Image 1 (cartoon, rainbow, N blue to C red):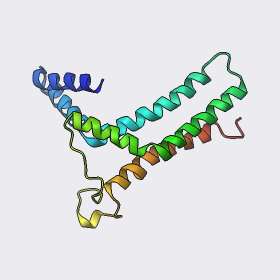
Image 2: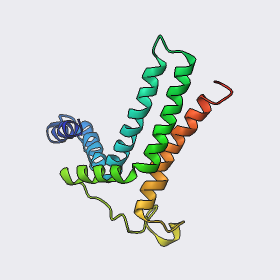
Image 3: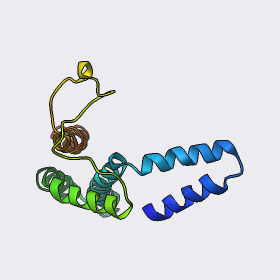
Image 4: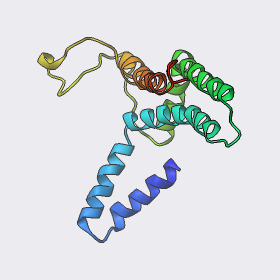
Length: 157
């Protein structure tokens, strides 16, 4: 799907009849050709794969409360497992895609720079890997877990 979308956007950039369409397609294409985009696409794909099972289970007409509680608990466990055990594998997959599509990958051992990279704007000294692992990957999963805990807390169940 990624490759097909890239091809459509490239066609729109080269053959688009309206300048605005060509410009927007070029902007989207540029964003899709970044490590950040590919990384977040994979993160969201994994999370949605796990939560989709919960959504399907909760929509079954024959679902009873015990199975619903079990599905919620299983989803939380799977998200925690993803958070605690899957970053390295996800990063390998992202790097593989980036190599395949010739997308520049950052040096994970370099210092992560925020803003315009001026020293006065740097709040903390963390590596690029730390940024992707803890500030992005773990944060997104933690947010999903918080939402599940909020929606399906012990009082509600």
